[in-house]
Amino acid sequence: MKSNQDIVCFGEILWDVFPTKKVIGGAPLNVALRLHSQGHSVGIISRLGDDDNGKNALEYLKRESFPIEGIQIDDSLQTGEVLVSLNDQGSATYSITQPVAWDAIEYNSVTEELVKNAKVFLFGSLACRNKVSRDSLYKLIDTSNFSVFDVNLRPPFYSKELLIYLLEKSNFVKVNDEELEEIANMLQCPLVGLEEKAFWLIRKMNLKGICVTKGEKGAFLFLENEFCEHKGVKVNVEDTVGAGDSFLATLVGEIFINKTHPSVALERACAVGALVASKAGANCKLSETEVQNLIRTSKS
Image 1: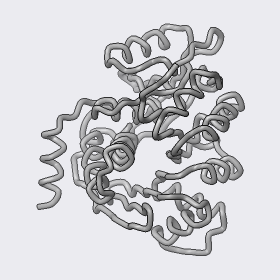
Image 2: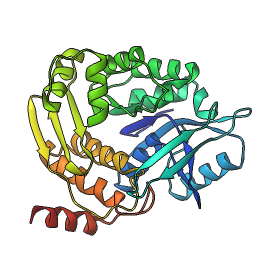
Image 3: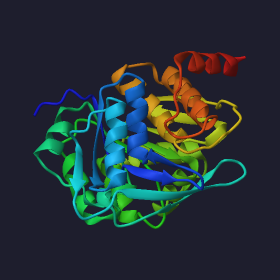
Image 4: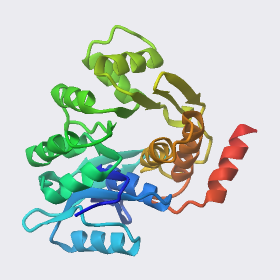
């Protein structure tokens, strides 16, 4: 099988269960769906249970015309769920069920071919909580052309050894400010400032680049000896679920596929992430007009 998907994501497909609703999610899927909505050729490697949640997930993806050849079906483990709680500011906390189907993603000829033919292979750390999916990811990283690590720390599902391995295997890393502080402390970085720590991590792990997000304060980016930053975009927050995923999707698509200048890509990513935070749900619909209007007003 030959794939023409420019970007392939790896990891969890699950249902986010809120007090009053249930919506499809998982960071890798959120990234993939946002890339898909932006017109990119993208797929995902994951695993669903042979249950109602799994069938509903597949139906959702088919309605979105999203490719499903990388999605495996497990006949014993159930489809993943996450119980989501939101505080008064819209910030989310998560309770992640286990074991579930995405803990058992298998390495096979289909997954290998998908990654080999992709320009970008994107993954997070949560999918490594189980040995089966972790071993599959390790094999796939070794076949990838360009690896993007979305550091998505969810205690207790990571270790120092895991993070070091994934960082050393990555070309580009996206991390938030709190995660960067934790990793820097873990690795006994002697430096103080966020930017200094990010550049230290680039050198230590031989990365091509890193992006550090700072919530409403924006983000900064080191890439191929170039530095750029954005102060962030102010919006009224509805909920923050998936905002970082849409930010990352936009950044990756613009920089590594569209070859947009990093500073322009970062500006657009901040706008898209802010727009998602201003709406309900990780995979809310966005129009290009909304994105451009927010970019324009953020400059004034």
